[in-house]
Image 1 (cartoon, one colour):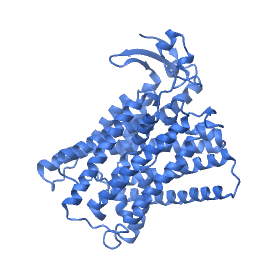
Image 2: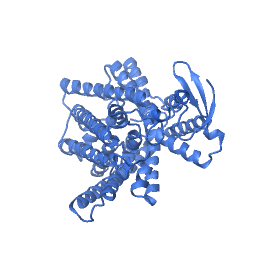
Image 3: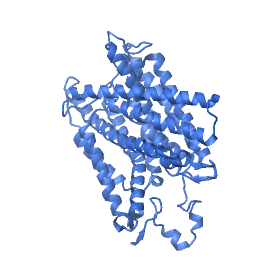
Image 4: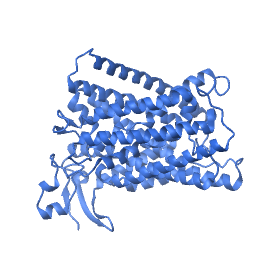
Length: 483
């Protein structure tokens, strides 16, 4: 079947069944868009895909900087803060009433409905800047994992003393080619199958890393660990201790970040039950699951490697053998990041395409779609603008990743830059505005204190990440894989 029609929004796709049956209401939601089919289970998969990512790989290093006392405490604190503010944000999907109010499809729409003014533009800058940064970071991380497979086989064949240097760039190109194909998935509603696969992969490589760490602890000799982490004068200098402590906090903040896509995930949920209720359930399951894995991977990884824990304990070659199991874990990481990349870039695609459709409503290049039958996949809506723009975006992120191949510090900078505005500030401000909370009341005061404390944490973590990036730039040598 081929045909051409005008696209009214990024979600409205050509559906022959609706047209032939003539029953529009049965197939549409209360806002006139195709009926949503997501459940708390698919939302949990999206959350786990977004949260359990490259951040888990640096947790052993982060715990090593903070020690046995502060490390687990910071992990638990960020998990609680993320869960609390996520439940506040889930109630903002509809406004003014969280159950029957008007739907808000993006984070910017939520801020516009509840706060308005310049805060809408600030939210958009923070959200989409972060999403672009995350997709660049995931391109870097996926290439490092693919390079690690090649290096692992080299070490197994030639011995651990061999350098086995390999460029990341060819693997970034491979990752980009895969993303060009997957980026033609029309919107977030069609991603559930990919998120489920990615979530399974995240459990797989986290479990492998945990198992290898446990085996290393049992086999001994025991690594040197302390209550306060890396020791000044032995492991690091006094200034390095300060900077790395703040950088570790940024890494942990990034490890829980998913507020940038929370509203878009919630927009996939069917009703009843109410979207905010289903999203809160998905959030509790997602955050609880990831926190268990984070504490286990971080703490057991620290017990295995001690204060010398690598920045990425699978690609940093804390483990050389069994090489095939390390290879499997890194393959799982790459597959997971393929799905995670799509979870984070779909809101960018949707925003740009909807804005262009509004700006040039008569343009056939932007708005016209052709329905084409694909073998085993059924009808697919081909759009010329979507093909060109999304391909250009993936290429851009790959090029930037090649120019900026530093992993640990980039991770901390992303976490520090996005954590306060998107995870803390806007959810709290919108809750205060929605409930018309009196100034200087008890709840208003402690919420403001929480917001300001998180701002300070974000600023010092960002400063530490920038300092680390400056150091890495001086040390960087082309064609040497960054760990």
